[in-house]
Amino acid sequence: MLRITVELLPGGRESGKGVIATADIARVRNGALADYAVVLDDAVLGEVGERTIVRGYPRWPGSVWDLVARGLAAVLNQSREALPPRPAQPKVTCA
Image (tube, rainbow, N blue to C red; front, side, top):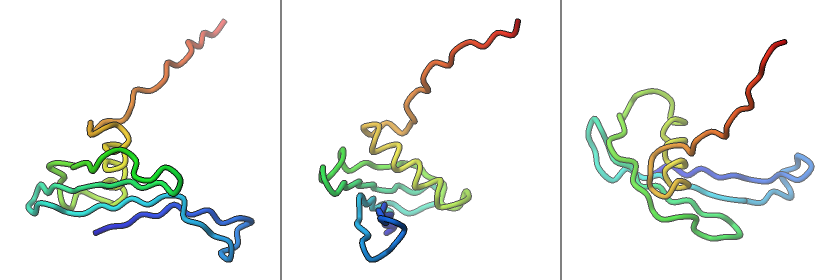
């Protein structure tokens, strides 16, 4: 299992640090295309969203941060493994 923590370090000192949120990512099916369960927990809100499955993730495509990003996107986007659409960009015209 992989646990990601988001911590607040007031003034940059560890003496007053506090955990803001955690995400747990666990492999639930082995293979070249493995499945991972993701749970996101907020210190104030409790569990955010539902336990979500990232399906068919290639086991060794690159950095573990890709798996983290896909897992968080899936949980925050209600089990749809896609990032939300970007806001519309204003048109820039040159005169």
